Length: 106
Image (tube, rainbow, N blue to C red; front, side, top):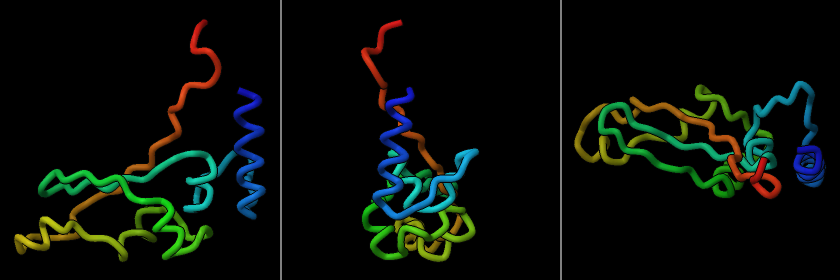
């Protein structure tokens, strides 16, 4: 666990981001630095899309907030837009890095 945290801190330092404690993952750069991801789920048609973190950081910047209200203006559901339905009836889900650390045995 300690080794994993050191790698996270090093990744954040390399990205030029300051990791605060208690740890606040509140920007796109920090989500990427801790190995997380963001997906979008449409409440109308149930379409789920895993968002490309590299593309979002390239478009919005690493210091852009990852909060729903700050990301919402840039996204819409393509299926609902094509069908003429409400294209903004979606939510974002932030996923933690669930990669097992160590040997996996207790």
